[in-house]
Every structure is written in structure tokens, then in C-alpha cells.
Image 1: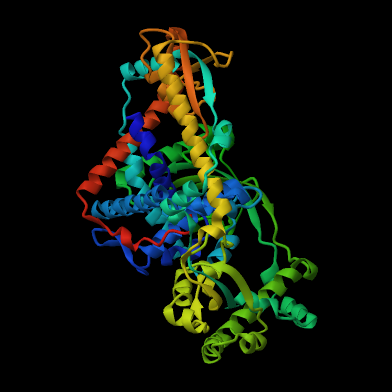
Image 2: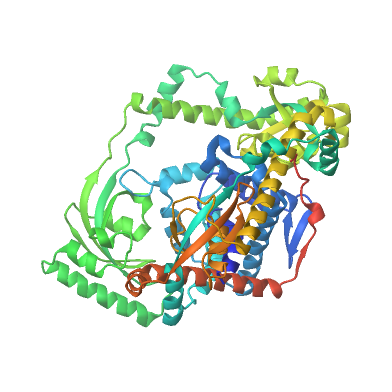
Length: 640
């Protein structure tokens, strides 16, 4: 079971990321609908659901962004361009679509209220006091062409995909006998010493002669392939670009403020605590009646002088506020559902409400604070007004300019100068642009758009170096690009890559020599034990405390036959070195240590069993779901 988890761990992590990420973060949401579009070759089909080449490339790009956020400039796009990585990405997409197919088959859905709860938890949309910033939420959605309703539906869809994995994983059970045995195995120790064979120690013996170099080059031509690439000019017509060129009259800004003063009033906010007794709006009448009776009883206790905070901690069924004595902090009127907001805005500070029924259940509200309600000064809101006017003017100008921009780049197809001058745009350039999206480009680069790249690298565009048609990319911008210089795909000649080829040969050969020397030494030690060359320090290695050793080294140590000591185990550590471990002593687990660590192992083992249960379920679902793949439709590999 543990081996299975290890083998599938990255697929499982990728799948969980795909299930959790899409609608719960705003970055990249503008591509959500396109993510599901049928654009490009179909790589796989799950029932009637398709996975396209465009969708694969977008998943690959998102995964690289995760790596780039973790590693910064050290992130290498080649990490995701190996056969293994590409298969993991495709497997993750297939798993996601399979679960979506299964969720639809089982009629699994999520309520609007559940989606709203999830949205209120988005960290980037909270005020400093922790309340939900409804204005920021709506503004961000508007900027992305979304409505609250459409976004709620996307969140509901994503949550529905999580229902099955969560339900299946909760069925996992770990027996007491299994826990005790596994804990004892994890705590068992083996005392070892290490003998290392490092590739760098063999580098002098690994330099190729001319014949060896030519053979290595010819055997590894793919390593020296350079994909087709181009130097590109491109022009972007966007609201942001147009807004940057707009100059405002100060008097117009002042007039706008005077005419819209009411709009710039500081929103009145109220602070309240509440006690919630849950009762879903679709609950049966008897369930609602029981919840209401309980709420009425709590209200009597509060009115009788009970400590509101203490009662909220004990009785409230709102997990977000109960621990804080029911405190909700400050919130605007539109941050709450209407019945709750109406009640709060109808109270005086310090006042206690009666029962307030909402779609969540029955609330008892205590108003604890008031703030806001004044009008902000012109100087306070001037930057906001300027941005708003520029946005409005840019949106109008974009609408008026889109057709002219599209016609201009088409009619004068060998230059961008007239269109750039007309709309005050900057002609931009990019080097080494490839047919597939290049992860080295900035995340918001239009040259990541598959439609634009397909047009740019069409046969006509490559041959005639003409402007592409204006193509809409993320955010509603229009982009045209043209090839200035084109280099077809080629295998670089040995003379051009000789230094690189020599280095690669030396690295590969020094690793081979280190492994060969280590394996020869291991055979000699197994035939005639000796302590010569081993480091003097002994490590007490256990499965729970590997002493910094990698997993395959620990597996080798505990797989070695130990009937006679010393015993020896050898392992190739992924080309970094070949290491031999001398096992000199076995230390069984101490019962008291096993017992002390059992709670930790219980949690870890439960998680492992839950993951395996889910993987087994997923494989069973895939087995009964018609799945077809066409790996020839995957995007071509980039330069290795």
C-alpha cells in the first residue's frame, strides 16, 4: 500500500490541486471558460468529455507557475517537459474529468449557500477586520467579465468535484493491530556506516576521445535538437494600454466628484455578535421547528442575563464565530444576507434582536458597534475617481477602436507603425518564441495564448512574415503578432555543441564509473567483510527517522538480509553518488516509544489509507468509464 501511494503521490497531489484550485483564487480565472473549450486536438476523451491540447498546455503552465512561485528564478520549465511529467499532468486531467463524469452520473450538487460560504473564506477578499469585502469582490469579478451568479456556479461545480473524494476518503479505517505493527516497524533502528563513490572522483577518467564524442552525439541527437523559434513583433490593444494614454482635465475630475458625492460616502459598517442554530432552508418542517425551539430557549437565557459570549461559545453552530463568542467583527450591509442585514440595521448599539430567520437557520443578534457613514474628501478619492474615469473612457475607446485596430493590422500586414501611431500603442518584441507556450514568458504575456501562437506559426505567416489577424486573448485584449526572423527546427551540428556534448558525456560517464566501482566494492564486501573506507560515524537509521538519507537508501538498508552482521546494501542515489551501507546492529522498537508515538502514526496511517482508498476508488471508476487517449496530439517536446 505504501509503495502504491509513493508511486501515485505526485498524480494524487496534482489531482487534488486541480480539484481545489480553479475557482477559489482569482488569478487566472479569466481563462476558466477557455480552459473548458474544445480548441485544438483532442488528447483524451472520458465518455463525452474531451481533453484538448490547449487544456493540457494550460494545465502545464499552471503547474509551472506553482513551481516558479516556490523556486523563483531557479525554476526550470524543462521539469515539466519530461515524458514522466507530461504523463502525470495528463493523468491528473483524466482523473479530474473522470470524477466530474461520476459526479454528474450520481447527480451530486452543491447549494448556493455552500458556495457563498466558500467565497467568503477567500483571503484576498477580506477587510483588515476579517469581514468580507463585497465591493472588492464585485469589482474583481467585473474586471474579469464575471457576475457573482456565474462565479458562484463555478465554485459550486468545483465543490461538487470534491464531494466524492472527501466521502470516499472518510470511509477508510485503520485497525489497532495494523497500527501497532506498523508503528513497531517504523521505530525499528539499524546502525549503519557509509562508504561513498562520487562521480566527481572519476571525472578525470571520463573525458571522451573523438570517436567516443561522435558516438555520444549520434546516439543522443534529440538532446541537441533546437525547436523552431522566431523573433516576434506584436501589438496589443487593451483597455489598460488605452487608459495609460489618457490625460484628464483636473476640472472634469472635480466636477465628477461634486456630481457623485453620494457615491463616495464612507460605507456605514456595523459590528455584531450572533448565535446561530442551523436549519437549512430546505429542511423538513419538524427539523426547522426543533431548531427554532432550541433558538428560543437560548434567547430566553440571554434575556435572563446570561453572558452572550459564553453562551455563543457553547451553543452557536457557526464555526467561524462561535470560538470568538459569536463576534462577527465590522461588516457592510451588503456583506450579509438580507434578513440578517435588515435586522442589524434596524437595531441600536447594545440592543439584542429577537429570532432572525435566514437561509442558514435562526440567529440571535447583538449589535456591538457602529462606524462610517461620512463622505470622503475630494483629495481622498481623487486617485480613485481618476482611475474610474480613465477606465470608463478606455472601455469606450476600446469599443470604438477594436474594429479599426483589426482592420489596420490586416490591411497593412507588413508593419505595425500606422496602427501603433493611430492608437498610441507601443510595438513590442520577443525573442525565441516557440509554437507551444513558453513557460519562461511572463504569466500575463499574450504570447502564451494558443490561438495567437497557432496563427503566428501558420504556414502563411511563417513564409510571408505578415501580421496575424487581431486575436482576442485573456482580459478581452486584442493582439496581432508577426514573425520578424524565423529559425526552423534543426539538429545543431557537433561543431556547434562540442563543449556541451563533452560536458554531458563526462557527467554521464563519471556517474557510470562511480556506480560500477561501487557495485564491484559491494560484491567484494559481501564476500569478505571489511571496514576499510567507511566513515567512522554511525547513524541510527529508522523508517521514521531516516537521518537525512533519501527514501531509496532507507529501503535498501531495511531490505538487506540481516541474519549475519555486518550486512551490506548498495544504492545509486540518482547519479549523485553510489553509496554502500554497512549494517552493524539491529535495534528493535521500544514498546514505550511505540506507544508514545501511536497518536502521530494513527493520523499519518489514516491519511495514507484514505489516500489509497481514494486511488482504488478512482481506478475502479476509470475501469468502468470509457476513456480513450491519443498521445500523438500532445504538444511537441521542447529542446532537451
